[in-house]
Length: 112
Image (cartoon, rainbow, N blue to C red; front, side):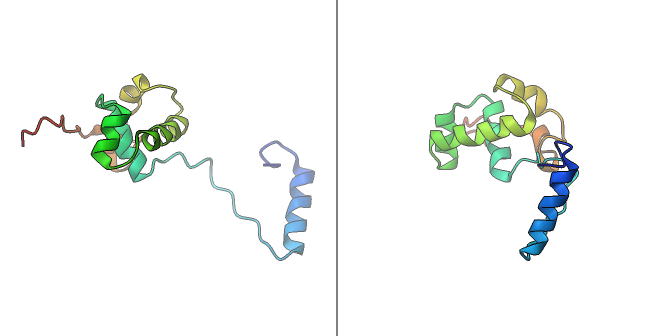
């Protein structure tokens, strides 16, 4: 946090104090981890397909509130603020693991 803010003196001091207590400083990654979990990926695709939170919850055996929670995390990770933006963002294969954003979601009409 200190190094991100450009406060090198505080960064060095925090590192020294952590080492003095026997703790180690975790190496920084090259940026935040914005990859979606498998559950977030499935929920995002179902929401993109037009399903409501309740319908997604029924499909995945979770509550509509849990769906809403996962979608909020998806929005933050993808840098969006609405379901409307999911279609645009999820057409990019980098947005979801293994190109999942490109695969169609079944319509749930029972055919097949």
